[in-house]
Image 1 (cartoon, helix red, strand yellow):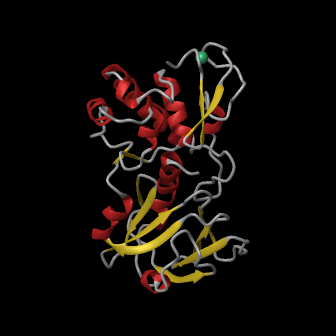
Image 2 (cartoon, rainbow, N blue to C red; image 1 turned 90 degrees about the horizontal axis):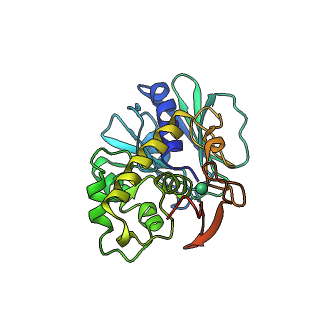
Length: 270
Ligand SMILES: [Zn+2]
């Protein structure tokens, strides 16, 4: 599932290509996404000039010249690919935007958990939610410490809660917990101020390193030009159960927390 670094990589790649382009047509082949595509989706986008694509949490947001915003969430397996006009339509290519430079931007999503919409700028906050973006400078150790007090949840669940912090998922939470030396199952309420400082520092480092490497391509993820990322080669714990820890050689463990695999080193993480 694309997380912050993957969505950020797509936004940074596509933004300069799309900004100022006009959508001359929209082809809809499949409307049955997680939230069904609005019947007037194509009409709302056709003729609009695109502003600069940006990212909030795991959402791609592109302002339009009529004051509305084009929103994309890639769900589990969504891809947004910029290509030539004569790209052959593949199975699972659900929506294509045709641009005035004769290129197309294709939304491809085998599992159809994604979302595409056009809405008023004022409605965006209600969709994106109240979580602070994981790269927002206002996300500090003090904020995390305050937020974790009295919480009857695990450190991992708190970091993955999109209503608290937006943009993190299983891969990057596993990696940042390892770097901070915190076990995924540690009670959030038991995190010390120092733990929170290490968690926030680890979060920023892991995310910026991952963005620099174009994100992690575990199975489906590709950027806006159909290129894989390479941060999966740097994972210390994610998907490495049974392999030796890069710091201490103890075998990495995999436990299930709220239905999701959680990878950690039992010696480096407390
Ligand atoms: Zn270790």
